[in-house]
Amino acid sequence: MKKQSNSLKGKRRDDGLSAAAHKQRDLETTQQKQKKANTKEDQVALWLSVQPSCPPPPVCLEPVLPGSAFLL
Image: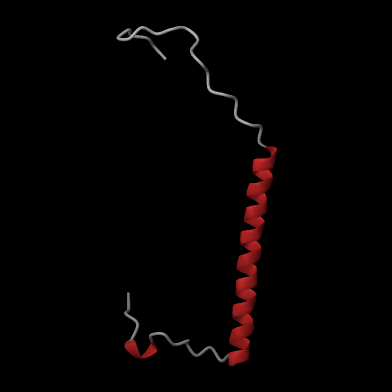
């Protein structure tokens, strides 16, 4: 794997785009990421809304003597 030279560090590679074109591309990329995140959040909210509530855990009604062995 080649190391990036220090002269290019922190700079955009020359892809022939103007500053305005870079800004537009970055804006579109950000909007796509936000849309994807919102879709994922909506799916989670929908999943949570349709899930039945969890039943309460089983309760042992018989007294258990200290030191007694029992199977779960």
